[in-house]
Length: 144
Image (cartoon, rainbow, N blue to C red):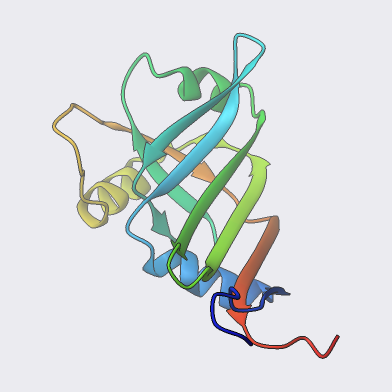
């Protein structure tokens, strides 16, 4: 590599376990869903269950609650990218979401999932990890 030439970076696909581990370590992510026929994206914090399900808080009247009640497909993404080195990772979990209604689960999740904004967020939505995709951007020569 010559001076002024950016480092070579290539994308490596992550396996499911590594992707979910990275997701579990991320402090927050984005939930993506349809709202009034358009894509909507909301930043939220999350909890990753042992089976990979993503659980997030939301508030009464949230557009996502309507989608979850209809079991529509949503995506959840978290990432950690370093613009200086052009390295990092991204993980996306996609599946129909559902509202958590079991009282025991509600109590457990509300105790485990700390709110990161000042709002009444008594509703929880679960996004099962059926489709998990993840990529890591790494520096180095790909051999080409």
